[in-house]
Structure formats: C-alpha cells, structure tokens
Image (cartoon, rainbow, N blue to C red; front, side, top):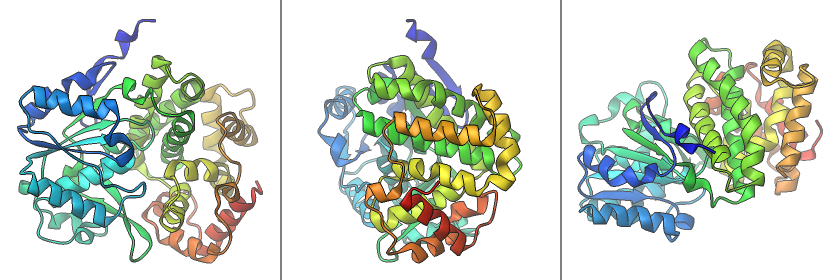
Length: 389
C-alpha cells in the first residue's frame, strides 16, 4: 500500500500538515511560530506514554525548552485552564503545543487565550460580542497535534469548558483561538483502543451529520460534511477492527477534521443533549453523541427526511429511505459495540426535566432543524435512556 498519497499540506481552515510521520516536524513548526519554550498541554493518560515523551524530546533536541502540563479532566473545567495558565507563566513559556484528544486541545487553546487576558474566563463565553473583549496581542501561538479522531478541536475557534459551579458546559470563543498550525499524523492514533476509536469516530460522524442537517445556509460546509460522512462509513469500522490499518486511520483522522470544519454551519440536538449530560454525569462526549444519534435524527424526521434520503444515495446504502438510514446508523453502532441506550451507560431518569431545560439553553440547540422545547428534549432523552427507538 502506498501511504505517501496521504502526505499533504492544506491551508483550510488553517495550515494543516497531514501524513504518516509528520509529528517529526513538531520542533520546526514551533520555531516557525517563534516559540523557544513551548508548553505541551496533554491529558494524564497521555502524559507518560512514549509518543508524548518522544514529542517532548524532539523539541528538546532541537534546542527548545519544552514543559508539560497534564492536569486535565475528561470534561475539562475552568480550574484546569487556570492551572494551565499558572504552569505557562511559571515556566516562562512562549507558546502552546496542544497534544491529545478533545479535552487536551480545548484546554490548550483556552490556556493560550487566557495567558494574555486580565478578565476571568467566563467573560469570553460565546455570547453576543463577548469575543471583542479579548486582547489578541497577548494571546500565545498554538500548534495542535490531535491523537484521536473525533472532536476536530484542532480546527476549532472555541473551547468547551465545564462550569462546575453551575454544572454547565460553556463555549469560550475567539477567531484567533484557531491553531496556527495543525499536524495530523495518523500513526499517533494507532495505539487508541477499539472502544475509544469507535466513540471518537462516532463523535466525528455526529459533527458531520448535524452540520449536514442544519438549516443554515453554508453550501461549502454542507459539501465537506457529506464527504466526511462517506469516509467514516467506509473507514471507521476498519480502524476499529484493525487498529494498525494506517489507511483507515488516516481517512478517519481527516474525516474528523472535516466534520469540525463543517460544523461552523451549526450543530444541533445531539450536542445540546450531550453537552448537558456530560456536564451532569461526566460521561464521554463522543459516546453520548453516538448513543443519542438515531433518537435525535428520528425526532427531526419531519424536516430532514429529504436531506437524509439524498445522503443515503450518496453513501450508496441499499435502502436509501429515512428508515434505511436509521437502520444503517443502528447497525454501525452495534458493529462498533456502542450501547443502544443511555441507560446502559449509567444514566437514569432522575434529572430528565433538568436535562431538557439545559439542552434547550445550550448553544448547539440553535442549529437543530426543529427548535425543540425543553419538554421535547426531555422526551427524546427519555427515549434514549430507555432505548425506545
């Protein structure tokens, strides 16, 4: 197999270097961005792995003073960001390497934002024109290196951070939070377990699907979403079943980046509920989206059916009807050993009304094809908890 075909540089939506072994360019990229002392931000699980040690050593051998910060929760909090800012300042760092999954990348981007601000984090929540409060001159440069294929945070202009006091997930936004350079190296995902490969891959699918179904006008994003879904259909099962399949890993990784590029068109009910459930239950975001997917699609049927039928034809499904598409989603989840219900993940009905209210207030709800009420979100969530499709 010729894997050289996957080596490419793109400049959409930022400078992206994709291909096998591109992680070896990390030190050079840091220097291009003017870094002499980068802070590598990652999560505790990755901090002690050989690939992280190798990335740090690559920087040090190139004469860079590279530190590591890894005090990050799976659903990162404002305290994680504050601790990262302290580590950045104490180490006299001058840039950030965002290294890991969505949590690490989100914290890294928020740290790079906050090291140059005098206001508290929540002052930059994506509400109204809050983003204009940012002092851009003092933001730190970021190079993003994802090690999972799901969130697409490497091409995002925002970070999802949990407000523990309010039990909410808040979106921190500024256009300059988009990393300056992204290194997409599929080899970094080879050690990911089948379970995490499946959950993160389904997260990528949820991004592309919700972007595709959004009613906002953005034909370019719609086209990117369409192709991202096809890549996930063709390659995610291979990546889960054969973790060392670099072609599959490469295609799933780029589909993740495509999904996150597309969702500037909007997200929807899957994410509105997943954000709410994640804040309350500290559950894996990708897994929540995967479980919720068919229930939210079915609730939106009256508006999205023609679009889903067109998507089904593009995917060359045997049954191109709406029901045929739902059947494909359910079959894919089963193949990837994704639970059919939220109840199987430990989520119960005790906070069902609160979940509905949180979902309707979530920023992602605005992009849903139907503007559900809090009660409707509660009904969808109840169906997902019980597995009533």
